[in-house]
Length: 345
Image (cartoon, rainbow, N blue to C red):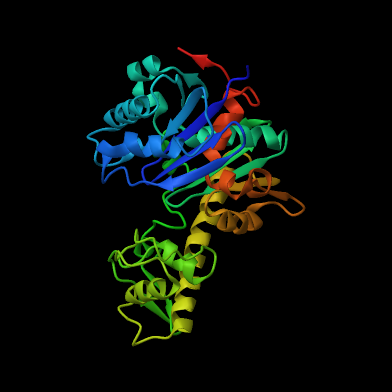
């Protein structure tokens, strides 16, 4: 009988999973708020999939500041997976590009820290082949910009710190990033206007306002705890320039949102150029994915060489598969459809 797999990507703000039947989905879970309930959240997400025999896992949640160190964070995630999915062996993906069993990761926890990007990049590199490629994965919180060449990952960094220094990781995304971190000032009513250094609004408000992300009246995981609706998003953005709904118009707020989007886009384009200049030169093809695939595509249009191509994973794996791209990549790898399969002790 064929072995069935569930792959889980344990992030600090979201849990993402993919099944070997092709289904994938994600679920918001702020690990730093309730680390003690992580096992229950994993079990709940896993229960929404068909039955499975084994588990592949990767993570970034170890960086959450509820943990004293990343080492502790990895071990807590390992324990949560073991508690949530008893009786199912877990294969942990490492920054060495291999899978490891639980005992091995307990002995060398940092091998599993922030390893999810490498799973996706490994699969993307295979799809690019001999071309000079760039993986652009834009999530809710961070963006990965990974050079690819000759069917392999050409990243210079492996840890988050190394990747930040090499512009292969940008700590900004399309939902959770505070708008005040995008720029010191943005144009408003035709004038450069300083932004309030306050947690008034996030990039999710920007992209709800611009129509790139859907509103959700039931979701209150926003800067002010009010619903993630268009009206509330505009109100949160207005406060970034110390205004409110009585002192500015929706059109003025939309213009501010466009300026914020441009600031983030320019930052990502510059980082992509820096990451590629040191490794592959100008990419011929870009693989784009993530909850911000729409932004990844725009970045790709700016950096890919003339005549090059852009390959959206949403078209290949579906919207859910693109959002949970790292988990979907684990399925490709652990089932032997990609390099790095097999579990090492």
